[in-house]
Image 1 (cartoon, each protein chain N blue to C red):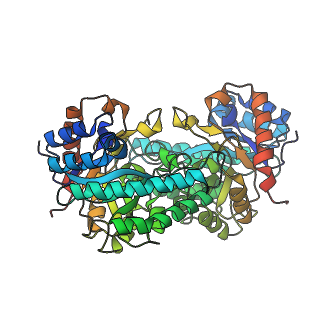
Image 2: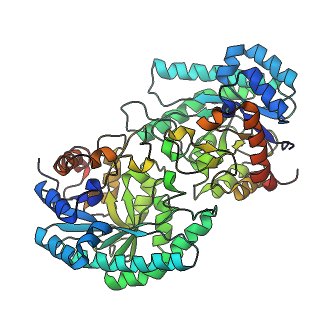
Image 3: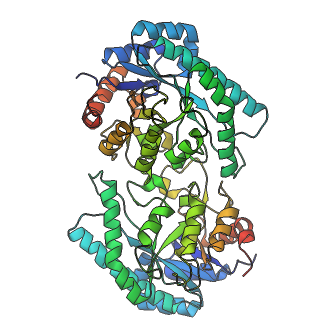
Length: 299
Length: 299
């Protein structure tokens, strides 16, 4: 089976792979693009990673992840901001090393409530403030900070930004090229306001993260939702087609909003992680072809 | 410790109790009101249940539960509608038997996606249509159908209505006394639009379910959110104060919207279910007193 030309494998889908193994598995599967994670990049070193990425001929679709912006002011918060500055530089370097069509997108998981806190509104304000500190650095580096709304079941411990609307409320406070949002089907499929917000993101027009329309949508990620959820709810993500999400209207809406970038498949799932990389890549290609690709308008 | 006068024990908190045991535990704990479930009522018989409730002197705050409105047209859907008509009658009978201040409120869990379906929008339309069929029966019986938005993590398998805004979108299509919504902190605490929607519910004014203001808010339920979630995410509900929910602004908003009814504590939690009823009641009274009661305005 030929992989769709917009499919990108997010490295977390083969979590235990080294950078070299991830690049090899992606290339072997005929996938043209990859989303990387900071830890396996750090294990090889940034410059060496960029070289290997360039040698592979793959596009680079995003770096995961920055964020964790909710601590109160103090050393922990300062360390988080500094670390995000490093992540911005890493993103720029990797995007420059990727093949034509790479996207300098840094995905942000904004963080949950600090220990002992019940102040959701305050935590959300600190997310916005942190992005305000980082937006100029992102702009200077040509990088887009991509705020990822996570499913509300992660609101307390991982991301106090739960909806695309919230992500856009923050993103719109900054220049369109420097801050956008991630649309991840797993996180947003249930949202009654989803289509309105996708349209709103697109209405921001051109000049967006990908430089090719799509407004505030900096990344489109697809994976499926099925119940019962895994005992660790973080690990409940499934191959497209293996759950209840209707990828037709969501995919059409994202492209109608002008999005033309790669589409990542990012799966946190212990069974998938325990499978051979080649099998995972093949199933990703097949799931994408069956459940997502038919809904992508012809370029 | 004296139980707050508005506290109501939802029977599900002591899931394994018979009706008599539930009434006895509630009374022994000094709680003045109880929310009942259909199964333990059916085990005793409706008329006998009503008699025992009347003898107890307790108020009746709601019956759980009707709903499950998402099947396509056919025998399953018809059976669900018919069963809800029975539940409406049960609610009226029990509310009439409860002490002064009882509320004829039937809580609705609207249902998830039918097996094999990915049509979330169609399922939501069928919920609205079913409520349209039942609203005249509810009005005739003096019962309020209370649409309960469930947390989005239950969107596929239990309730395709995930937010208070969605519940109000449906409720507002029907007379204020016959259809309202439940505000359950566990389900809605994360919602960035929560306060706007509570205010919207209140703006519907008097004539609401409780006949005493509160607009479309037919029931206010409090329980807490903590992570990690239980392996079965249905069982993740905690005593008020044992998690991250800030009951202060939510409670104040609900009362500012005019709500003056009882406040139920409904806990699905295996550890709590495995505890002696008296201990559960005492902890419920104490948790409510510490985390919720201080935020209830003086009557």
